[in-house]
Image (tube, rainbow over all chains, first blue to last red; front, side):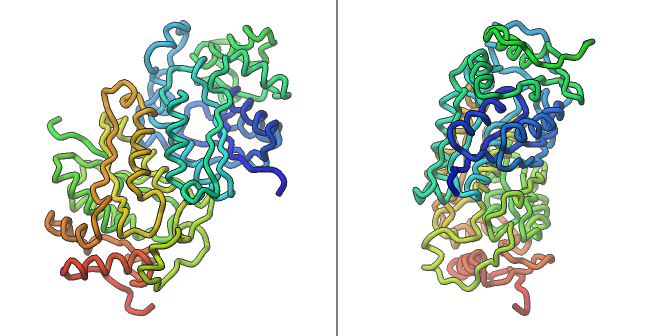
Length: 232
Length: 232
């Protein structure tokens, strides 16, 4: 085994597609991990599959977890996804699209798989700048998870497989993420970021995620390949 | 709502039954959370149901997660459960019954549910003395998880719902756990601790978990109500 393995969390969106390409560039054999978690936007999973194949993941696994069991978010429960919010509105408070403990659950599964694969390297596409105000997307959260993970696992405790949570997008603007991925050959037309996409993966163009994504392409001076729904 | 809510991880074993009774004693309305995770010992779940009912949990939820997806443990994969190990043998190294990142995954789900229920209180029956050498049963792990959780959630970050991981058994001997639970009226005949129980919940008497449990009753000077298989 020449290549080092890494577990990469892949949602099918723009950020995680970029992370997958970064992991590959950094010499890792990426093991892509996605979740079917009762999300509204199941079109994401088809996108995750396409992205994992396009970037050349060593393997792609979809874990089934039912977060609807607990409810509490517009992404899993019957609460409307907010639309047409201004950037300064997104910057304040935590929106209803926040899924309680989602990244913690995702990283925990990644940790289990990483240990089984014999690696401590985990990649996640969290971003603390152009994000939607979620607490589990901040640098202090990522560090705290990494510290905890090194106390949780056999490899971390014995020092044979120290856990590293790679969050290469953490301090990038959306424009810089788009530029980085484009330079690495990521085909963003394969990705779906919309919180309220159609079953075919067409974006609404109006939720926080769509607004941030569109601005990213605009500010990067790159064409936006997103497929939008024709009528709202 | 007079009672404070708490999420209590309930496996159906001796430890978590005791924790459930402690949470009740401490004035919490317990919300019991169990997992169907591809474990060999599914008799645990029937026990969890009995225990939650007997102790008076406000609700009992079983989350389905398939850890067999990743393999890597005698409790989920096709590796034999070790039997007849001496106590000093158990004290060294991490056995094959270790499930990678299991407590991290369980606590992450508990965190999601807690936030949805509007509480930060989570109980877990980990124990750092009479345990099987798992890294995620130690005090430093529990503290690190708590710290991470307070950075992960809306309630933790905003300070409205600080997360507390209660691990009341952490430094208790098995004998002391048994005495505490007995004083609180726990009926241990309802519980199943065995790593290799029959479908009816009869214990093998020879795995690490059975050995530690039997010693607990013996050292506590209490009758052992465990139902053992008649032939091995």
